[in-house]
Amino acid sequence: MKRICAVTMVRNDEFYLRKWVDYYGAELGKENLYIFLDGKDQEIPEWCSGTHVTACDKIPGKVVEAEKGRLKFLSGQAARLLEKYDMVIGTDADEFIIVDPDLHMSLAEYLSKMKKHTSVSALGVDVGQHTGCESEIDPSKPFLSQRRYGLLGTRYTKPSILTEPVTWGSGFHRIKGHNFHIAPGLFLFHFGYFDLKRIEARFNDKDRQAAGWGRHLAKRARTINLVTRKKSRDWEKWTRKARILQTFIRPPYAWNKPAMLNMDIVVRIPDRFSSIV
Image (cartoon, rainbow, N blue to C red; front, side):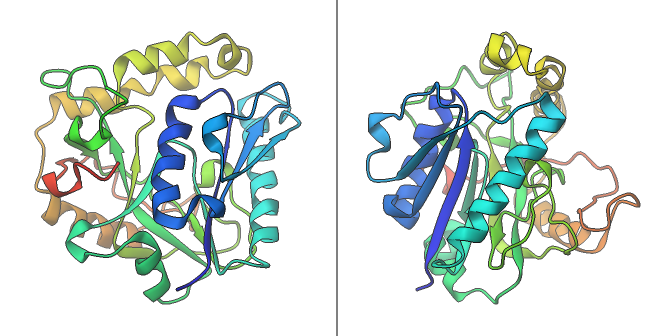
């Protein structure tokens, strides 16, 4: 088995970090999780016991500047970790890289058998809330047992898995100077915009408002609007098509990002994923 670790950076985000620690801890071992708290004013949670947690100086600046600083910092940490690990997974705390249950493999098993690339991407699924039939999220239950719909855009098909020291762009969305490889049977589920009440709470958070996130967060109800009003498509057919499109199509302004002809494809997530996260 390859030596694999995961890194993330959060600020005042216990809701997602708990789930991140539970999931990646089970998949990789808690001793292989590296968590950086953005600001020394944050206390290290007791429930992070067994992981590596560091409270750092807060990354300065507004949204764009701070995000560049955050990913520069995490790229440096990933480079350091690659001195003893074969792979480093970098995600936000609301992102979960999942192997299709039909493959009957753990994440570590899947990645250990995979052909080596500088970076590997999972196909992005932006999970939404169908407000017509799905209620407020219950954090004590698996997320995917409560959410059945997602958007197959390109924003969350990220080069999240590294085998060599490189520099991530803002939000892990691309790697500077490198192309990307989308692995079959691997998905990145993003849960940042899967609950309308949580979006509203984040929008009203004073810490995020001060950092200039208000306008950014206000746009995030778009995923909820799309999964609520658009007819859902077949998962197997459209994840296969999306993988092909995103592999071969590039936006003219960024050759190392995936594109998908500006299609907003809503899919119904199969029941086989329901107990994983």
